[in-house]
Amino acid sequence: MAGATAVGLAVAAGAVAAAGPWDSGQRTAERDRAAVRSATGGAHHAPAPHAPAPAPSARGVLAALGAPAHDPAASLATALPQLLGPLLASSGLGPRPAAAVYDTATGRQIYGERADTAMTPASTIKIATAVAALSALGPDHRIPTTVAATADARALTLVGGGDPTLGKDGLRTLADTTARALRARGVTQVALGYDTSRYSGPELHPIGPNENLARVVALMTDEGRTDGSDSGPAPRTGDPAGDTARTFVSLLAERGVTASTPRPGRAPDGAAELARTLSAPLSDLVERMLTNSDNDLAEALARQTAIAGGRPADFAGAASAVADRLAALGLPQSAGVHFADGSGLDRDDRVTAQLLTLLLARAADPGHPELRPVLTGLPVAGFTGTLRARYGAASAGTGLVRAKTGTLSGVNALAGTVVDADGHLLAFAFLASDTPGPDAAQRALDRLAERLATCGCHGGPTPAGGP
Image: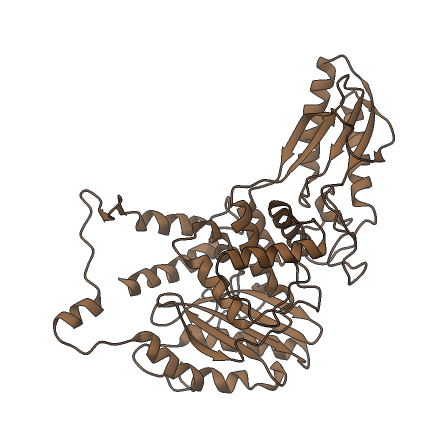
């Protein structure tokens, strides 16, 4: 039965790649698989009426016949050192890479090499950010952007809630609602302010101005991008909040409302909400963040986690809030683990390969369905996001490996899941520092994950030169 479930995951992995990047926080294949699994229900999980009885597992049948019990995790643990060790020794991975592989069916780490050594994770830290945000806020949470008005509606404040994905359509909707409410009160001229106080601390990431990340502020449009792109590096505005407020003034003017030049400041005491627009659900935002390695979303979700935990919504508060949430989930953080930001751009970040695999395993746990977008958002090898151009049509990992990439100068990482040749879902993490260059490192990382995909190790080790 466990094998059949894991084979179902393999089928779902292929279907997921064709289901589009985000589908209301849960890809169609995931929903279909959940529907299949829901054939059992009720407090005692009895078979549903008219449903066929579940087939006995192979292990149960063999035990009844007196056959010797077989531990697939033990077979894997025996096989993996000889399968992965030579690949991990690749010069492309630098002098001392780290690795961990976790069998989600048995809940055991089945391979480790420096697995508890804290290393720079680059963007694989976004897995921790995603788990923390979903745990703190839930997958249905939406980030609001609002307009507050004084009692006479003569003064408005555009209030940022921290949604970096607010687009022109959302701003137009906000302007529509605002203009209708003002016309109903006979108001056509207003003073406009804009409030970014939801976040605190420095706006600039420690790396400084960079095309990988806008200023981290609570009010912006399209992640501050100025070239019309929706992912990847891009030129950014130096004043995302002010630009958003000025665009809002123009939209109000198109609707017959004249607004003053907007000024920064908190909404005045007594101001009440006049209009609001909401982000996509957090499940969608997490998927987008992981698929595209979106740094702006990562920093925003870390701050939303800080707000939910009562910490300051700045870099330090967000990092502490992520650590708090992981601790609340019972995930061990060994000596040296340190969160400095939500995106992984900060080289002071430190995580272990073991922690990354435990995060992925927790997201696969049926007891934590709120974390499932962490898995559905992982790029699919050869198909989506930052793995679209990696692997290839001839690779055994294409469509089976789903993983978050991590790349900084001299740092390369890959962490995700793969269904092996025996249908077992494995979580893995490979971290490398002092690498000679991204191309060699990425090829070495991809070979490691591909090897897991082709491993038929539950009946014994596959030769290192095997399929």
